[in-house]
Every structure is written in C-alpha cells, then in structure tokens.
Length: 333
Image (cartoon, rainbow, N blue to C red):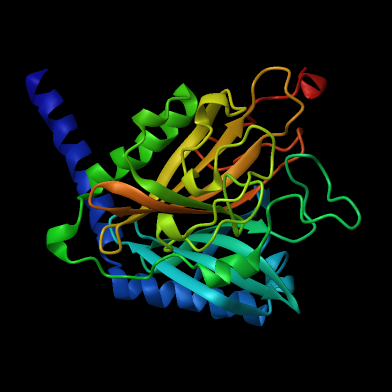
C-alpha cells in the first residue's frame, strides 16, 4: 500500500512538472510573438495567420465566437493605447487598451493562452460607446451608459514598464495584494485593501468613483480641483480614490474571481470576476477585467474593461466558473 501510494504521488508530481515545463517553454519573447501573431490575424480577419489549435476557444463579453467571426470581422486596427503584459508561468499574455472597429474605438482587455507554442484560448472584454450600463441602455443624447471614455484613457494610459528586480513583489504577494482589494469590496471595509492613498481607478476609460471627471491620475492631490461635488452628499472630489464609497457600495459579493496573469516584471496583475448586487437591487451585474498595477506592495492604479450582461447570460463562461451568477428565477427549472 505504501509503495502504491508513493507511485501515485510520484506520478502526480511528474504530471505537474510536465505541465509546468510545457508552460515554461514559452518565455516572455515567445509570448510577445504569439500575442502579436494573434492580434495581427484578428486585424487581418484571417484565423489562418495565427497558430490556433483545433478546438481553439474564444469568447467576447462571455459569448463564444468561432474563428473568423465577431472581432475577426469588426476590428480593423490597434488603437493609440497599446499595453502588453506577459506571464511565462501560466503561458498567458494580455493586451489592454484601444482597438479600432472602422472609425470607432473600443476599450478592450484581451487574454490569450499559449500551450506548446500554439494558441488555445482568447478572452475579450469589450466596452463600446453605445453599450448598456448600470442604468440600462444609453439614452438618446446622454453620455455613454457604461462609463466609456477612450479620450481620458488616451491621456492617462496604464504604465508599460520594467520594475527593477529589487523593487518587485513576488508572484504570491502580488496575488494576495489584489485579493485584498476584492475582500475590501465584499466586506465594505476600505481598510482591508492594500492600496496607496489616492489610488486611481479607471472604468472603461472613465475615472471612478466620479460624478464628474477627475484630473489625470499622476497629478498631485493638491493640484486637483476642489469645487463642490457633482452629486449630493458626495465626498470632495480631491479626496476620491479607488476605495472611496465602499462602505455603501451596492454589491453583495464578488464571484467567479480568477487571476490568470501575473506579470512580475511589470508588477501588473490581471483579474476577472462578476459583481453581484444586493438582493432586490434593479442594478445589473457587471462582469469585469481589471488590471492592477502595484508599487511598493500596494495598488497604485486599476484599469478595467467591463460589461453589463443581460440576466440570462451565463457569465463569465470560463472554467472553473462557467455558470451564471446568479441564475435568474425566470429561467430556473
């Protein structure tokens, strides 16, 4: 029995080592090349230009899309915010920024997975100007309902950097730091989050929380305007940051949390999840990709591409969380 147990343990360790080795076969340069090939193939509208495996899986805002459809038909160029991040440990690469669909920009996160130097997955989060938001569809003549603002994103893009080795947090620490932010949201306790004072958060291009636009994230706090808040009983805009208002935030839980990509060199972490509202709230769920940028073991800025799914859509539609959060009573058996 002992010998059989040791054999099983050795087999499991060998399998894990083989899986890790397969991922490690694609280093940062390999991931960079694979992401370039994929994005160029999408722009060309030609899946044969990228090394897609048989059964390659792609979603766009949680909806499965066959190669050659969806963004393969709509995306015509990369935009003027173009950020790339790489995780050789998991064999994944990511793009955050703007893509062009003809003359129209869209704010996107793109995640791809590489296995044995072939592309097995692509996951898109896309924010377009006329998409629905927290209050439903965009009203005629009103601003975008989903906080879409590519112009602010152009003026305040996320960092593209190489952090000196001595200033980096390790992979496990970066994940814990990001988890602290989600724990602060679900507990409605800002003190839980490991963030810098004045940390910035940009949702689909718009700084948040905000009743109006904030100045650029890098602007010193004393240089920010201190006029009256744009919404009743709101805090002074000069004091807003990425944890402002969590005490009363309309959210019951953050579900389906995933962290598929950690770029230790850039101190950047990509997380996915679903914001589920408080019971009885008419506000829809939103499904998000969030890029966290960490300095000195605390979150400095967060950039998102998110969408507001209809209640019947199963989100996020990626294992291990490929269910619906929550399942609407109207479609339950």
